[in-house]
Amino acid sequence: MKWESASQFFAMGGYGLYVWGSYAVALAVVAIEIAMARTRFRRAIAEAPGPETESDAA
Amino acid sequence: MAKINWFYFAAPNTFYPLAGKMIPWFAAAAAILAAIGLYVGFFVAPTDFQQGEGYRIIFVHVPTAWMSMFLYVVMAFWAAIGLAFNTRLSSMMAQAIAPTGALMAFLALWTGSLWGKPMWGAWWVWDARLTSELILLFLYIGFMALQASIDDPRRADRAGAVLAIVGVINVPIIYFSVQWWNTLHQGASVSVMKSPSMASTMLWGMLLMALAFWMYSIAVVLVRVRAIILERERTSDWVRDVKARGAAA
Image (cartoon, rainbow over all chains, first blue to last red; front, side):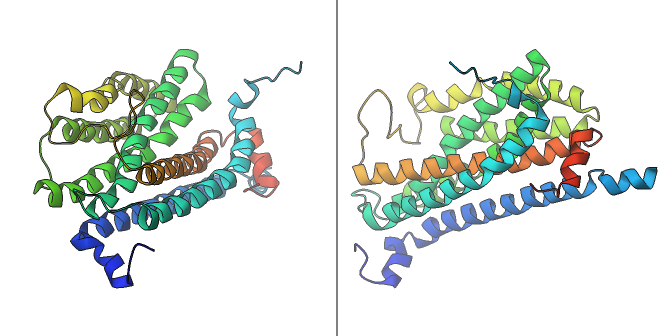
């Protein structure tokens, strides 16, 4: 193991803010994109005319 | 020899269930590759002799930058196919790729900025590589805005396709910018023409993360393209059937 402690790992040799700032935002962007794509899909399913709409119309 | 009809899946109603089956596999591949890639990047790859631990931004910066360029070419390809052959699904693919491409371009710029500050002393410089990548982000946003501004989806497809195709010229400019101009941004660490100028574990971490972002992009684009198919084909009988069978299947 190249890191001697957790705090050394999080410090990233003094570059912690830059390294973790990169990964945190990347993770957030990916999480938001997944949530938005899934919401859009669920809404598309919900708003698609289904059999019930057909019977309503009939 | 069995002949596969490749055009079979070119129709939205046949592609829709196929995409649904593929999404979990690409998502799982992305998660596994990212886990291995991050392990290699943070626990196996050595400290850089010049940039210390700061270089570890590379494992998210380079893959997102590669994907931002690659996705643009794929988006323009599908847009061009849609324009030339009037195939609905191709244009929907282009539309589904744009937001993911824009996010990759944003992440490349964001992580680059956080890398530039400690290494160059500046969050941003108007260097050829950075500027052309910023133009790529604007091309994605322009493509989405243009399509959103036109009510008729088929006209929006055609207008977007023209913009996407013209914008392709920017991709080689980004790639070769570090050779053509005297940039602050470093040259390519990995190239097809010569052996990579970095430790092999660093390279492996980067390649694994690039594969992870690739698989992720496919998965999220497929989710989005299924939503777009439903939005656009809602009046057709097969959508009614899909909903009758229990929606998500």
